[in-house]
Image 1 (tube, rainbow, N blue to C red):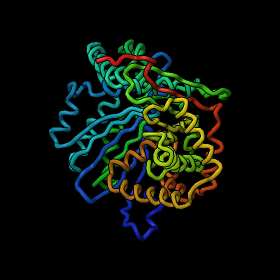
Image 2 (spheres, rainbow, N blue to C red):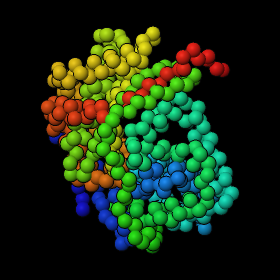
Image 3 (cartoon, one colour):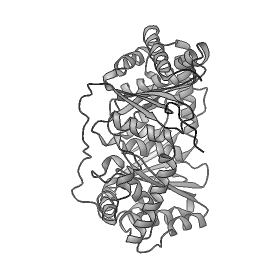
Image 4 (tube, rainbow, N blue to C red):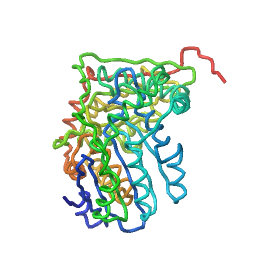
Length: 445
């Protein structure tokens, strides 16, 4: 099936838009393949996305998805440890990997005539990874050091972990992608092998090839290198523990002497982008921009930073590209001398006034224009296009949903955004967090 992966703004003559042509097909072993053609430069991106992330880990083994991402750069029957990235670099390319709650991905960017080599190597490590006890010990130390640097040494990151764990009462989205430290320290060889054997399979993956390629060429290469790989039998739908009804507001008060700027964040459980029904998510996406997208023009920024000068910084966010319910939240960093009690009250007052006054039509038009422009810029990068499709498909959306998203955003009305605001601001489904220094804390060097 072929379609034009175009934005809504392709119809706007004021913006010249290049449209990427997308072809999709599946191999007999269950591997889904997308080809995004871009013949402007002799470059190709290969992305392999697995429908497995931190939210798919077995209980007590948090961090195994991210751990395995690191381990995939170890050896196979035909490649030595580290050889994969060395070969990519020797061929003038770059490679990397990433893990989230719903997916794990691997990608390379090389000259178009090196695609066959990349597919041969990537398909090899899909099913032929060979790990040793020494590999586990060495890479586990790397993971723990990464956690120490990114989380343990950052009070904001520790606070964020605690707040997220309080928001998701039962769902594994409350577990950090990098894993809880005590569980990550206990990961063993069999944990990695079990996760690898189950999830790293053609029937659990999406291969995206973007760049100066032809669909027939990609199909032939995919059949050659990925086609012979055996699928995981009995791999059913992704079932996670569901959230119970949220009946009580939760509060997290985190104190750390290393905090430089105290702040308040309130996060609400929010619906995700559902396949075939993305209207609520579109309204929440626009609501985040209306409230906190630009400090000079957003509702929170204009009122709290400029008019009342109660905040150094304000923001709002919506995390809705996920397989299950996501989150919607707001930040306020108060001016020096203002307490967090006063900051929270100011945030609440600003939101209450917004619910009474509604959306400024001129601001709403500017936000939509900005979205149009950002979609044009995104079309200029095949890597961004590949990420858009990969993240969407591994989060449960269809190709039709991904293609329709820009138009749904543009069609969303001010009334729909206000309705979404009134629904989302339910304090029973919220976590309010304070990050601050302890009283009379001494600054440590």
